[in-house]
Image 1 (cartoon, rainbow, N blue to C red):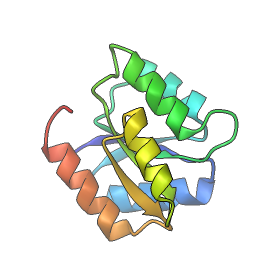
Image 2 (cartoon, rainbow, N blue to C red):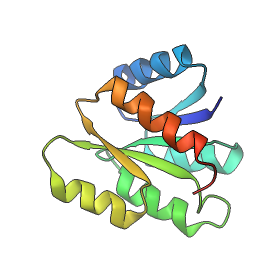
Image 3 (tube, helix red, strand yellow):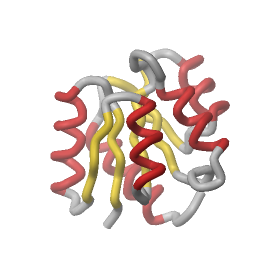
Length: 124
């Protein structure tokens, strides 16, 4: 199964996603900011990142751009969590380098499907 980094400034959302991923057999770690996510990716290997778009200090868009700029993480798959109904946020996520997206509030079944899809597909 996959080792996944969950990045969201809301602990309750991280906890919920972690619980669902654990039930699916995945392992995960958490980060509360984009900067923490970049630090975690520099130190450890992840198969996938689930990244909130809107976070204080460094949001998901900037964090994904920085992941893509680094040779060590340029191919890391990222599922961006965006606000429901905000098509421009989805476009911006893809322009930054996101692999896929889910809308908030997160449909956990859909998230699990996307995680399975991207973890089975191999490197980006």
